[in-house]
Image (cartoon, rainbow, N blue to C red; front, side, top):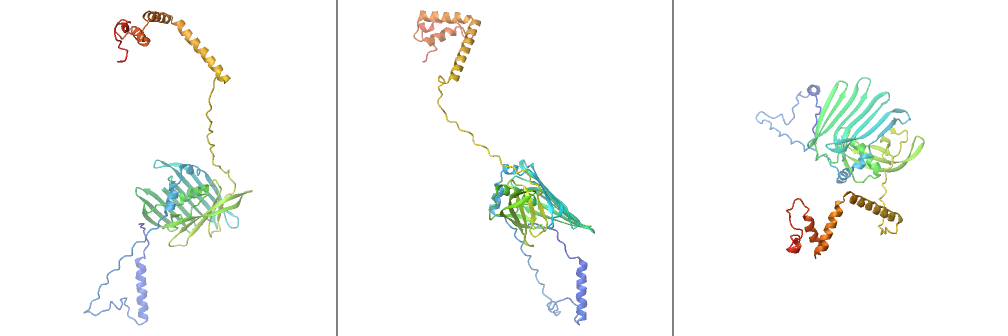
Length: 407
């Protein structure tokens, strides 16, 4: 369960409240005592001590739906590769005035030995001449699990500035998150711990940007998916996605069809907050607006729309019987190769004249002996030329049983 450092009432303030109660009772003619009727008992009957009430049970954390967890597990490496590009948008007010810029960049990284996504998002500008901005830097795994995240927001007022910094890290079997809020010279910090079991289906602000691109590229937002997310007070809440369907949007001088997706965070303590984002078919962000806000982030120039490469199937060739004698090209190759081999053999015989003598001697003995088993006779004859065998007669097969014959 998360724990946090909470602000308590200062002791001086409690004493001032007790003093005011005593003065009000005295003016009304009542005794300046803060004891209740139950506490004002006779000396012979001392007041009974009231046992303290048991602490309320801790509230249960929300859970992600199985459909949402399965959706995150279905993301492939090829889909992540298609998200590695940068989007640059301009922040515009409802009157058309440019207020700042918004940039999102994804790049390939290695998380715990596996491919992941490095996310960098920055939004800077000024509203009513007050500088403000947000920056996100995170390392996301292949299943959009947040490994490390840094989220910072700032507003620079004239008298003092407001800065919120959130750091989230995954360590062993839990998430450790720290938040620091600086208002002028006052600093308030809190820390929270969440087990990995409680964070299944969690989608941070960084992984949400990747998830939206993948949904836009798939052109599919499944129903009944409930994810986990943090609300503005850093309380774990549920979040849902809704497909708003296609619509036409003018970008520069071109009118293109975009796909709109709405993300809503359902907080248990505050009103729901929704954001509507529009994408091109390849995942480029064209507009982003918070529902109820007069500020819109919009793409000014139409980027090059990337199309997914379609790999043609390999051609299949049927096997046909080959008659090389009927094929003129193969026939002449056969003739050329035959003549080439004949020339090589004749050249070898010319360079080894002893070959003719050996063959002539063997044929002479073969015709004189006229053996029934020519193979065995040839083996006995040529065995006498071996330097590793003892000398023996080449006519063993005519005198006794040969060792080269099968027994």
